[in-house]
Length: 206
Image (tube, rainbow, N blue to C red; front, side):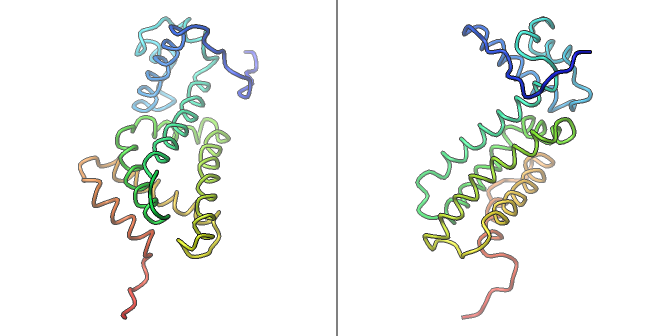
């Protein structure tokens, strides 16, 4: 079998119809991989779900791994755009954190399969899985550094804080947006924000 370079660019659709077909394949792959897992999903099941011929798949992707990588990139773009809009207009960093936690948990509940695809990528392409989090952390770190300069949060290691805050929301998202969708997210988001804003130390008495 010929070696496939995962860094090589994918074919670009030349028509609007081609763009729609490519998106249908991605949407189907999101559902198939999200529900079945990467190993059990196949190009045959993906194309059947997309209602396109298997040969059509290869007009846009070289492999199932290509589709997974593209979905991880898509998840990153969608999530960052969603959070940027959610925190727009927040008067300070803590308000932005609060809005961001609420928006993140709702996004994961609304897009569970896409989130599962990201988790699957850890075992298929560790580099793209790592890049997903590193790109997110880069922007997060910059926001925290700027907030510290403005005096909106205490000084501290913005890199460590970015990854720690991502870890908090990632795990809470799994617990309450993937594992148990029956729990109202409002109270969960507020409890998470209280932890972010106040920690777990005892409250000092004035």
